[in-house]
Length: 331
Image (cartoon, rainbow, N blue to C red; front, side, top):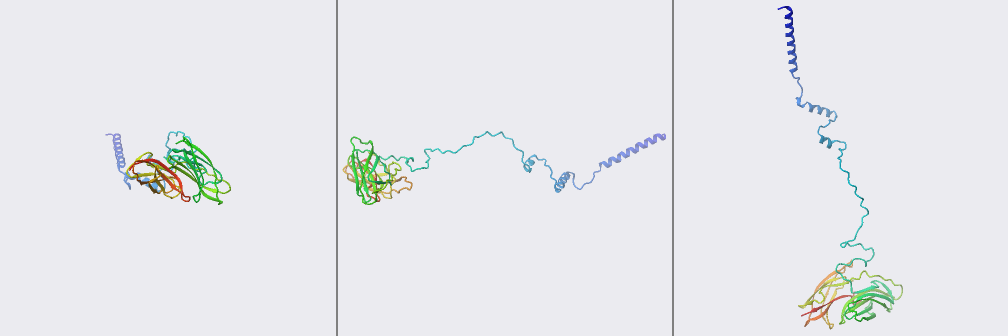
């Protein structure tokens, strides 16, 4: 083989050996202090130790933990709502308006009827001088008799007027009368009362007002609070037949004092065939208290009677208010 060919072969072998040496170097791994999979963690810990904040790859974490305002959520625009204007209160049947004046305009309590015997003027507590004018509205009884009386503070009769109306039974009348009196003191308490009688002369209804009677001076007239019945009988009912010797008497009342109510069962000839007393505590707001009691009676045969419930006067003797009902009694 010529010298030129031998040199070519030598060069080829030398190149092959050099390439083999380089391949061995590339395959030899460089030793490290940490495993390969921990390298990113080590880098992150190093940067955090130097105070460098790394961005997170978790979008949810970015939204919650970011110190900046969270991205706004788009919502449809709200429908404009008109401003509520001033609040208005409307009275309903179940509401009770606060009275601004004393208060004949206040709604009456449930089931309390208007009185059949109404003194319109003067009202209770009025100061009067003689003579003064009485105005009233009265539903006449069976005998159409109305009695007007004025009593002094000791119960003495200062004035009485009896009026009889023909053929006007159970009709309403407007009553006006001049009331004159004479007293010796400068002033004293008095009671003006109107009574309605039935066909037997028994009291059917009595209404009254307390007055201050003056010898001289100026009148000071008050209006009544209302014209409701002060004593309401719920039992017995009118014209009911009662048997067995005992009658249940019950109802509502607003007495002027703590005096007990008197209950009397009066026959057509004026005889009292049964009587009892029952207490009703006066209410501070002028509302009605209840009463109920069994009243024994004694009759020999079936007869019509009038059940009277009345309030006695505390300072001036006599009857302050009276209500009644007629029933049929049997032994």
